[in-house]
Length: 637
Image 1 (cartoon, helix red, strand yellow):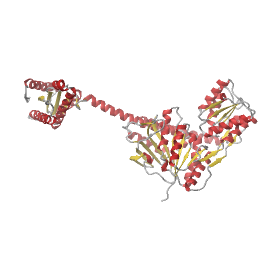
Image 2: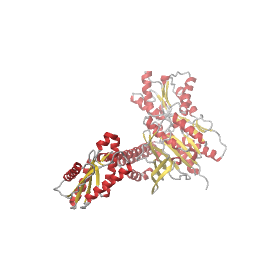
Image 3: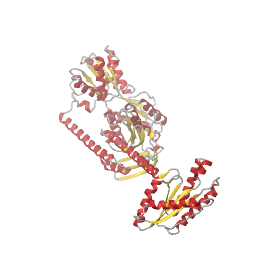
Image 4: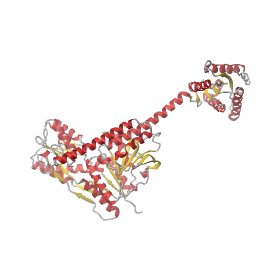
């Protein structure tokens, strides 16, 4: 059978427009050429928490690049340079052909580049030459990102060419996030006192927020100030005013990346860098008329369809969240996933969790992301169409719980974690949900929170069991204590009343404990107590009864439905066991005990305490008469 080529893709923010367009192009190539592709996706930088980001980025450490024929890295979507360097180092060690986007830092990698520099130059020149802007501010993306740096450099070059001033107060260094547009406008207003003629933005998301922030301050775009973006996103096209931006062939770039990698894997000769052109689109936000404005009817149709899809996804997520909030055991989670499997639109869903995830503490990820996953994982829930199954254990280096490479299969790996503690991951196969729905991240967090809650519930239940055990058992002797004995004995006594039976209570007092403590220490005294308790526990089980440490050196045995000769038998049995134990231990002292028993009818008129008191008196009577040897008095009431 011919080997099916399998490509690994590293990406962050999989549901954003840039990433989804790239991915759509890659998926198109995969389907046309019958190869397999697996996306390892994170949502880092979304909630402003470093520990949360570490949990998200842990999915990248799952990748065993040696299992793949090639890799595509969208490191330009990852803001954390430490994480980016770890990914690059790991894939380099795997020595597989690798494609990156808009990055010429790695000579061993192939590069699909979009000419951001020229397109940004044209935007800035247009604002200066065609609209007469003299003072121009800039909202930048993270300069560690090659695309952001290229656009930033283009802005500076044009400003220099036209001898226009630029200082640090005129630049806001953002992270490509929407909120950066608002923060930049606030900075420009505070620092500069008055706003410039134009604000050039490194992407549409920041530009759109800048426009809305300016509107709130009473400024009109473009009448009072020009704002431009980059990426020509759906929102930028359909905003009012429509945004002057840069259109990039993102889907084509994704397709070309797969095509280039596939040729390299086949051994074909290819160019190291493929450069695609980007095109400025001059529109209303700079004062131009956009010739490409959509027909209003078509726009309404698309907007309605998008709104309906979002509403459907929100309803689905709300229902899932409500159901997951009520989960008390693992089966509840699996039933919830079952109920929403069709809504996810995938051929297969696999939930992969750390080995013994319920009982063990999750792995806390350090800053170098060392070993975020256990060596072995479990897949407690796998659904493929109508078939539901599980895999007890698989090696995490395999990534998939089952052999998975199928021609044309598209897999999405997403992390399950609680802050910086890894719990596992899940895999969706052959679905558009991760890239088409804005709720994929919320869905993932709901699953993560539920898994963590189930783990905590399990630990809480275990802690309650331990507390319950501690409240009813003697920690030293590992048998019931007074409280535990009374609770258990009361149930037995009520049953004996109901069945018209008798009960026997045997009271045992250890002889000479004070002498052992005084002469050999309390540690030796504890040892002697534990040895005697083992004897009493063994004898009580043989008598089909229960036993307890009732006080410091006092023990009790209770037996339901005794025979008349059971008093002699229990006394004989305990003493024989004590003698045998003394021979084995060969201590400088001898274990010894005074034993008294009482048999009574179980009745509503006779309390259990009164029967215990009678046995106690019998024991003390024997203890008082004891001198050099034991004397046992057995009385049948």
